[in-house]
Length: 437
Image (cartoon, rainbow, N blue to C red; front, side):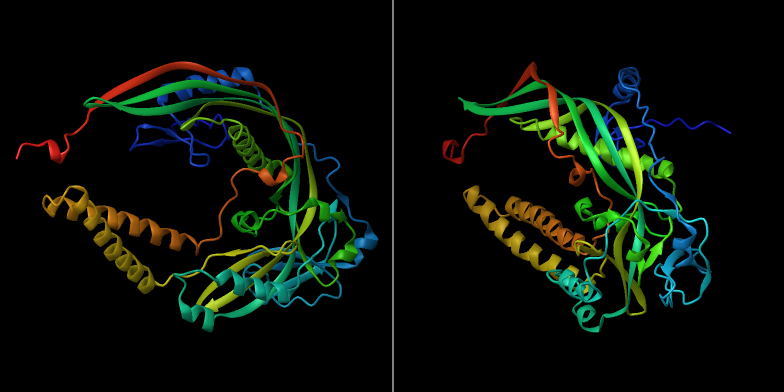
């Protein structure tokens, strides 16, 4: 079998992909782009500069529950999806929070690992119902009957297992900054582009970055409702589980560490980029990021699952049980979509046609009409596409800005060095008043 060669992004560490259209290498997560030659040299250079030897410390993350604590809890396993949950002995669980199956196999909890922290539920089921109604407001393309006919099938409160990651970071990131200046002289328009090598070195620290530790839950749901605030966390006591169900972790800290590392590296590059100012355009050139003092701890965070049904389709929403942030994907009315697209196209097309007709001093309608049609459709498509995106709330988080350690960001090197400039000249088209008639 042939070997597969894989290149990782120097910035965020995710796998790079070849873009056939652009004939270059592109990162699907942080959108960085590299030429074929550059990426090979960059990866070799980075490998020599910083070797990421992060080994996540999990020895103090958790301990085994005592026999007394375990005796107060039951373990349930869904025979449909395989999800495993934990509940106190007084909790009557009638269905699986993941797939809705009503058959749960009950057993005594043994050998359970005890979380170190827990954020107790701050929001109620009534808060979840109100949050869902508010979430549907302002969604223009949402079918009106969905609001009227939509019924909440069930609301399931669940403590979700998380690994909380701490890390200190050293980084050396190089950008290419560009400034643009335009002016007109005589019959020519000039464009001056100046290029600068922008280097930023320094460090930043992260605290309690949460990564979902359950295979039963799509990480898009748990990341969509972030952030959680660790200031609300308590030392774990099984009493907090009274009346609630809890998922049992089945993804190890080592397995989740790849996602944690990726988000930390993305967050570091985003934080350093904010220190680069005064340019019309900034592109990432190279990125060396090293993690150290890494640690992972086990915790339980509160989440509500809301399951609704409409036209025989099930829609699932997740709500942060601490902050009340609710996210989910909503259906779209195709009739509304095409009605808005057509209406906006007619309005912008007509407006732009008239505008360009008067700009060229009434010299024919063909060109203004073509411009009006093309730009009108583009604008109307972008607007309706934005309306459509409002219905999609389940997305992965990019970066980790909510988990920066206050005051930890510092720069040891911040240099902006001019490299070269390029000037292009374009003849200015003669105005209609100067044409021979």
